[in-house]
Amino acid sequence: MHKIYGDIYEVYMCNERCIWICRGDLCEAIYNSPNKFLFRTTPNNGLDELNATLEGLSFNRNWELWKFNRKLVTKSLTSQKFLRDALEYIQVVWEEMEGYLKEYETLEDDDNGKILDFSKWISTWSTDMTLFLITNQNAFSLANYNSTISQNSLLLQNAPKSILKSPGAFIENTIAYLESWIFFAFTPKFVRMLPGFKERVKSFYDKGNSLRRDIKEIIQKRRKEIEIMDNNIVKEKDIERMKNQDSDDEYDDSQTGFCSDLLTTILTMNANRSINKDTEYNEDNVHSKYMTDDNITGLLIEVVGGGVETTPSTICYIIYYLAHYSSVRECLLKELDHTFGCNPNYKFEMEDLNKLKYCEAIINEVMRIFPTSPSNFRMANEPCEIGDYVFPKNTQFLLNYQIINSHPAHWINPNEFNPERFLNSSNESRKSNQYFQAFGGGHKVCPGKIFAMLQLKSFLVLLYRKWEVELVDMNAPIKSYDITTRSCQQLEVRIRRRKFI
Ligand code: HEM
Image (cartoon, rainbow, N blue to C red; front, side, top):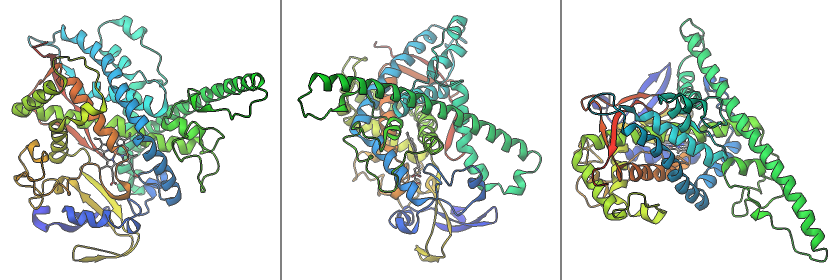
């Protein structure tokens, strides 16, 4: 359509006029006027039915609540403490994953070795890490996944006890929940009641409810843990006071063992504690009360969804491109060997990752040419001017990242896979990087962007410095499915240790 109609045109989506934007500068016009584009979509009864317009971030239409949730999530996911903890925990969970991979190294499906669906491994790795970092609870989805595919039945019996009833179902339900947004938003109510659609609606409801139950249990368990810690602190405090009857010193509870994950922050917010001393959550004029469990659930589903769905799919796409571009893979290995020397078990820090410019360029180039989030929505809550056109209030816009990221106005040889274009701004294969769209922009830009880049870079280091990954079918296209994001369905690989080790 872009070839026929140009950079801006209208499409009727379920009887609603939607303006498709296919050039970066037109997109920027939207990002740069946040007050005119507060929300993602026009009022929508499908999203209302899912409760998505009353909670969380993506489709929340309660502006004050959105601002409050957004501040919480952004501060939590971008704090130095969170990112440092994340870097450490990413490596801990990788060690567990590597332990399992070593078992498969010696097994064979055919003459060439064991075939693994890597998309499943990466999802479970990312789920364990994200859930722990955001809620301080263990999902053990990696261990559970390994026990289900392993031929060792003892593993299944002895799989560690997860906070989730079924970690596999949790991942499936999260992806279904994200998919339900688009289904409900664009399938009119009367169609949703027709045979064939009715069953799909029921399945979305069942999966969504199961996901909510899981998240609520996580919240309740963490609440109990905090209460127990609280009681212990009160006791310790009393003992301390009795010891220092004459002392006027304030009791400092910053050393109490509370974690600074998002869930703990929410549960202890507005309480008389100092665990969030370095943040500003406690004082908030709009919300002087605790958040309800339902509100916390809605918010956590979205944040956990980012870790369960988008990052793992992006890793799969990177692996796919690296398998097809051996010269790019060689350059990556050179950079890794140069940075980490010959110690493949070196525990890396943030400063090490910052040195990996080529690795970062590969990630950006894959997200440019095959974006995990191929499009995005915005609604004008005021009349606005985009390009040469004036649009009335309540116009729906679709920002087409897939086209923008390959637009000849922004990129030279846009269809060529070439990470070098991200290495320096004078490189002639890139005219301008300012229109590169991977994480959105403006006031709704992805709050998990820094965390996601940390995960992506770390994963590439952990995998490629020690392992060779080979696609089972080099001729097969990427198996993906566009829901709210572009979800990887399967990535069959063989994996073995790099030869020099
Ligand atoms: C490669 C990985 C990721 C990609 C490509 C990605 C992409 C995006 C995009 C395009 C948006 C829409 C931004 C806009 O409207 O301008 C978004 C929103 C969001 N992302 Fe991400 N994301 C990723 C990882 C994550 C992670 C790891 C988290 C959380 C741990 C996360 C949490 C969110 C949330 C909560 C929103 C909604 C923000 C709002 O509406 O205010 N994302 N993401």
